[in-house]
Length: 174
Image (tube, rainbow, N blue to C red):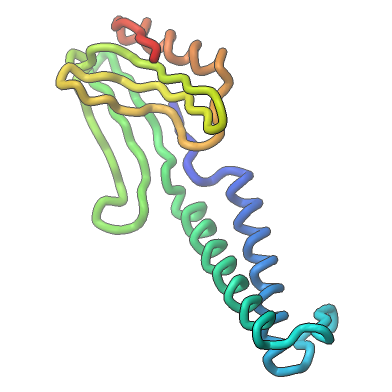
């Protein structure tokens, strides 16, 4: 199973929107400081540098920084990877990309014999959560699903039951 990380349409949309809006805010605040429109589409007639222009520069720079962070996580593909279940060799491999650095590659191997069951966690409400875990005999729970918008209920139940059948372990629901 491939897992999509931060390279999602919603993240690309927000990185672009925040960058564009932040740049507009920052340039408007900067224009109010120099008392001259730096671009013809910016109107600063009613904007004083203190306090409006200063606040616009501040919020603009924050939006540009957040946009840069989102863009870098998209380019680095943070959170993406795959789950491999190999019955012939008897192991489960969970691989994810992280942020650049010493621990960028997260690569975990577990023996199939170490898996106790597959657990599915479904929480509806204001912040819905639908996650599939493999539970090991040493009581560790390893999440397998992606982070982001919740997967459809039928789809996650089907994935969990298929995985439990494949691994020949029980399926628990929380």
